Amino acid sequence: MKAVFDDRQRLHDPQHFMANGKTYPSPEAPERITRLMTGAQAAGCQFQSPKDAGLGPIAAIHSAEYLHFLRTIYPRWQRIPDAGPEVIPNIHPAARTDNYPKSAIGQAGYHQADTACPIGAQTWEAAYWSAQSVITGADLVAGGERAVYVLSRPPGHHAFADLAGGFCFLNNSAIAAERLCARGLRPAILDVDVHHGNGTQGIFYGSDDVLTVSLHADPDRFYPFFWGAAQERGAGRGMGCNLNLPLPRGTDDAGYLKALDTALARIDAFGADAVVVALGLDAHIDDPFKGLAVTTAGFGHIARAISGLGLPLVLVQEGGYVSDALADNLTAFLGGIS
Image (cartoon, rainbow, N blue to C red; front, side, top):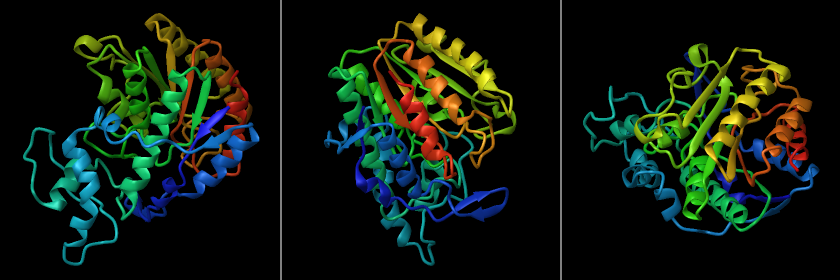
């Protein structure tokens, strides 16, 4: 299987992650790349570097205002007296229609949903090349490849059109789907990350061009909390084009695969001719976030079920954090793709 990655994606190295009122080292560390690459190569993946398609395919998803913020906020932040080493918000608007301030502090609060997406000196460059990797992956699939794995890091599915969050800055899965649309395809996004793909849902919520489907731990007591309920079905033209399948905490392989059958039936009913798989491996029983209980073998079963659709696949890396099983989980999944 062809795979895409750019080494500049290692440059983003967040130092802070605040949860439960405490600050921890970020789970979204560059070490993830090393382990994921080991797992992909064990499955026979051959990596290539992405082409630079420019800002256009990214701006097809993200607002110009937001992209300007991501590209300029770090040097602006450093001009604040006694500024910290990373851009981390401490205040947020009550609504997206509230005032858009000129202050770097205010704009950080507007464009960063939480404290899990600190911006450092090289965050933009890493996120840019993560996005370019998925653009190349989508182009390869549109050009006839059966399946392509994209080691996209930082990940993307919590990023909205103008809002970072949950370790994510640019929504790689959404960018890949939009690229497939531009190439004349009708894509579905299947998000198998343990967390709901709230940014992806938000981007396409009013659209019937892309079907969005997410299997995830029930958000009533799990991040991202405010999105991911079953009743969220889309709006306007997009009504019925969003399917959420929240799962009880600790759901095992059998329960997951049963829900996956529902997801795959919806993709078939949508008439999709390509699938972007938002490939979170954090549903694993030993992942640090402890949301679901999928086994390493279970990831192989999930992949075989998805392959049963018989559709071209862009496999976009989302979550999956440092554990002894991370590389093996990716090997099992990629080994199940046929």
